[in-house]
Length: 393
Image (cartoon, rainbow, N blue to C red; front, side):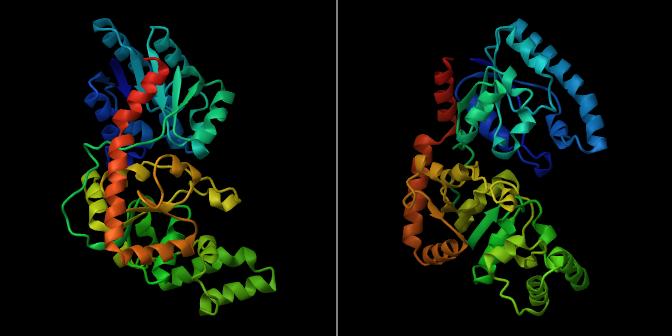
């Protein structure tokens, strides 16, 4: 097929990553499709998507008409040279006018949008989704929500490109690692592992802000007091706050950590932002690679949303041993306990980390099985082949 492709290199342009190019663009090319890229600075577009910021809203108001017009111009030009079969995008509402998608479809081109944050941010594509022929949706529980918008969703779970995600012959120098942004419950889990003597290291955006070298002891004290001030209207609240200052309360309890906005981590366990190849190499350098299933800050409202992620396929595809929080949907893609390992709560995580650190043979067997499963069933090349067939393309 002849595909016009429009997507940024990564969902977060500040990461200096080509994660979507590696996982979306390259597999389409490797499948033999004639892929024409949209020539436009989409990274700049993705850096300015917050409509609540006056500066970014001004950018959106100026950029959206310009992007829409340029998109249409380039597609018309490419279509004249040789008919375009498919328009494939990773777009948000702030990127393009719905009417532009309609104009593309009116040319006889099938319009497809890929989006992977609908678990808790469906509103970011609510305007444009109904104007596509198909929306590729990795969150099965959002399928009906897409339909309610008037969109036509098709379930397409995430995957990994085996040309990028592969084992490296390096020594396993780290016991436990996590690479990804510092948000949600993640800092509490890392602190909990450290409190239980687990040698864990982290890389990615936001972790440096949690370093014990980042702020002074005085600043830490006042931030800690501010985080508990709202609880000081009761005797129990006063006792809790006093305990945090004096050490009288067991701060290793995970519930306390999740509620604590002042989590500190030893500077020695915090790394920077990894380049794509460094990330893949880390999977081979680690005895245990961690994954987290909860989305954003959804744990704070009592309605935790769990979601499969790219990492669930990238690490096993790379031959890394993978341990992630259990969710039912994982059972559809892996044999839990034989191809990946799942934990159910923080204490279960600590128990299983200790066990597998002491059982290298079992770790290696599971990692090998996980890679074989991904090569067989979870490559992007297979995902695209399957969904295009379901679409009748």
